[in-house]
Each structure stands twice: as C-alpha cells, then as structure tokens.
Amino acid sequence: MNNTKEDAVSPVIGVMLMLAVTIIIAACVSAFAGGASTQFEETPQTSLLVYCDGSGDAFSIIFEHHSGASIQSEKLKIITWIKAEDNTMIKHEQSGISPRSSSVTPAVRIPYVYDAQKGILPELEFGEAIWKPGFIAGTGNKAATAEFLGVSEEDLDELIASDTPVEVTIVYLPNGNTLLKKEFILG
Image 1 (cartoon, rainbow, N blue to C red):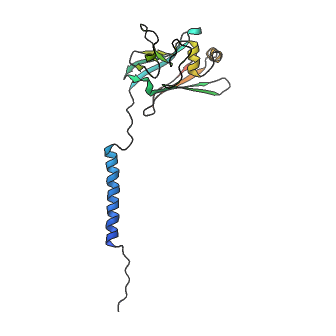
Image 2 (image 1 turned 90 degrees about the horizontal axis):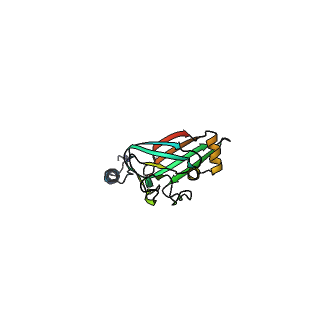
Image 3 (image 1 turned 120 degrees about the vertical axis):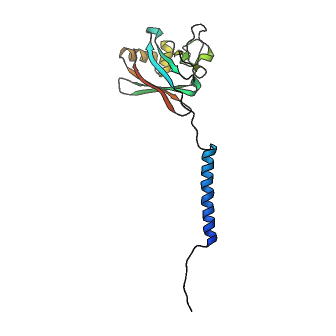
C-alpha cells in the first residue's frame, strides 16, 4: 500500500479567493472612476496685494484684487500674524462667519469691499462680497484695523510706531490652498 500524503488547497477555496480579489479591485476602480474619491475645487488664479494706507484714525489695511478670477469672500479665510516686541506671536483669523465690526457704520465684517458710489453696504462685507478684479477691500479705519488684527487700538499704535511686520495669508477654504502670503510693515 502506498501511503502518500498530499497537502493542497481545495480548488473551490482558490476560486473563491480569486473571486474576492477581483471584486475588491473592481470596487476600488469603480469608486475612483465614479467620483467617490475626494474631489477638490480648483483654486482660482488671482493677483492680490495687501498694504497699509492712511494715518491716525484713518489708518487701514487695503486688499487689492488686480487680476484673475472673481472670488466669493465666503470661501476665504484671512490669517494675520504679528511678532510683538516681547517675541510673542499674535495670530488672528477672519472668515465669513466672524463677528461684524462695531467700528464701522453700519456694522459689517471686515475687510469690506469699497464702493465709492454706494458707500458701505451689508452685501459688500467679508463673507458676502464677491471680489472682482479691480475691486479694493479694506478695514476702513484704525479701530476696525485693530479688530481685524486682534489687538487693541493702543497696541496697534505701538505696533505702528515700532514699524512691526505683519504677515497676511489668504486661504481658499474649499481646498486649503494659499491665494496670498505677504509680509508688510505696519506704519
């Protein structure tokens, strides 16, 4: 009698494993092709500029939209960093859900889009306005600028007097890409 032992995987189990692998691969390909993977909104191509303007109570931060795509301000977040004299960093964020500034009449979220003919309107506030090429937005006055930067007016006066640098970053919220990163001097 020949007593040989053979170890092998049953052909049924082999077919089931191949079928399972095929189904998993098909599901992955289908999910990717069908849009189940994360799709990011394309970042608008723009040319933006930020700087200080005015003096005294008229001191403000100005944002210019030079060219490129129009941007819905509700899709933006503006982050500012100030390095104080004691080497601490003051960070402040402004978005379309930030509180309205009480330093501008009527109260609007800053920076608001300037319209010389219409004045300050709620539809021109940050979070509502559409920034188009050629439009200028700003904080409007020193008190609103202090709110925008997250400091008191007295602290802002000291920061201006000492030519303190401020870094401004504008982030496009749908995909987290940076539209502008600029450092300028207060003063």
